Image (tube, rainbow, N blue to C red; front, side, top):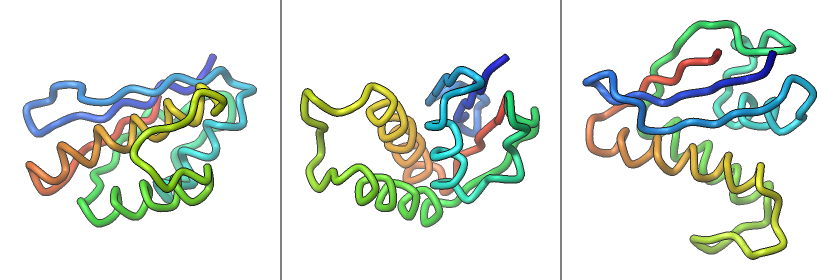
Length: 108
């Protein structure tokens, strides 16, 4: 059991991936940043997908940077691996959303 969260482009190619064990509280942070708490089934994701606009992903990235006190473009060496995983996931989704207008995220 765990949270496998993937981002996909319009062609259905995976462009972002984040993995959290079922007890890792960072999973709930990613759900919260994406305003996708309804997809959190506790020990894993619900198995559903949702499409996010560029603006929604930008909002998630800005909130994540603020939460993790990350004003710059890269994290310092002492920051948590999960924080990096979350911000990299959102950045990859944002790159696709900017190119295509939206990105689909699957919560497994």
